[in-house]
Amino acid sequence: MADDDMGEPKPGQWPLVILAWVLVGVPLLWGVYTTLAKAALLFK
Amino acid sequence: MAALLSRERIVAKPGFNRWLVPPAALAIHLSIGMAYGFSVFWLPLSKAIGITKSVPCPDGPTGLQGFFHLLVQTECDWKISTLGWMFTLFFVFLGSSAALFGAWVERGGPRRAGVVAAFCWTSGFLISALGVHLHQIWLMWLGSGVIGGIGLGLGYISPVSTLIKWFPDRRGMATGMAIMGFGGGAMIGSPLADILMKRYATPTSVGVWETFVTMGLIYFVAMMLGAFGYRVPPEGWRPAGWTLPMAERRAMITTGNVHVGEAVKTPQFWLLWWVLCLNVSAGIGVIGMASPMIQEVFGGRLIDLPGVALKDLAESQKAQLATIGAAFAALLSVFNIAGRIGWASFSDYIGRKRTYFVFFALGILLYALVPWAGRIGSVVLFVSLFCVILTMYGGGFATIPAYLADMFGTRYVGAIHGRLLTAWSAAGILGPVLVNYIREFQLDRGVPNAQVYNVTMYVLAGLLVIGFFCNLAVRPVSEHHYMTDEALREPARPSQAAVRTP
Image (cartoon, rainbow over all chains, first blue to last red; front, side):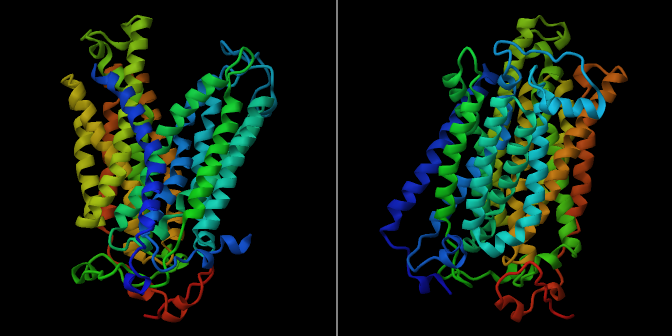
């Protein structure tokens, strides 16, 4: 079955995609930021 | 309830957007990735009774009797080395459960596996909370180590085959995104645990059991959202307009499917097992010793006191160095996760075998250069070498599922990946043991601290040389291992191994 058979992704799903990525992306970015802030001591 | 979790129930409906699947996988991997960050609890737990300082254990029984006494004693604080066994349990049970339950995950689907993983991981936290509250180390080992470790294994492999089936055009990138989450979990979990422990700490509690309960519940919600977000594509689905390029079809990407029971009989499986084991052994060895290594190699140079060895520094100066060591370890963890998404995505363009060729060839060179960087006193070069090495450690984890899919097809890739993860368990023991014993041996022979890691680096480079040749020996799987069309039409079963006759 090709994507054509399933139809294109519904436009209404894109806000859901963005919400899902924000939910996982924001904590991950916070974690990376916190870690980089700690790592910055190496360069002082 | 069983129907709600079944594979059939989560087949995507027309109009489904495949970009919803990676965040679902990330929700699970970011949660279980906290396994890497458990060391944040060791120091507070080593003062769980004394609160402000550790209460040492009086002389008691030794041997087996002493071990059983340690499991149930409530009068003195745990040593950090005792708590550290949790890591060993994590990775042994991760590998074992992934190997044992991989075929079940393929059969039952990712949602069922994700839900069971959520229950195991959360139960681990709650049982550990009880263990801390009652001061019973065996409850912590059983809870987080064993039950949580099983949750780790199930959660880790739950999205792999689903992602590969949704992204046949970008297998590396898709699995790289999820496995990046496993590397990033500790980056969220460790500071969060730190905040929570400070919040819950009282004059009579170090705040760990309350933190375990809170984090267990947070992870439960996140993992259930992830598990219920999983969808599998209909059988034979492919992105619109996409076909496997002919050039790749001829080379290292199979069009057939190999059953998990048959895959483990092939030399390709065992070559890839060693590829993963050796790449991970070298990386784990480095991660474990990163902080003490930079302090011992450079000593006073790190705080503008060149020529002063670590042992000759004052206590306050040693504390400064410890902070710098922790900063180095933190920087490496960022490169570890960057390598997971970066290298895995890059492998979609250059191929999996070439990617591992780079890991091993470049790795050998970089490990061999580390002693030279230490000798010339270049902190920048030393740190840079390890940053690149750590990208390849993470990249090795993230690229292996796509390598397996290329070799054995997508039908049983999750189960085959599960079996291969025993290499991780083996590496979790091999890497640190090798590094620690070589270091001790060198110190006993009177080698100065600044040079004590040189031989270790050459040994790790030697491991990569073996890995290099294992990868070089990987060839496409012979077609007689492929499943027959008839076997492919049947639902996945663990014992089903009908193969084509040569």
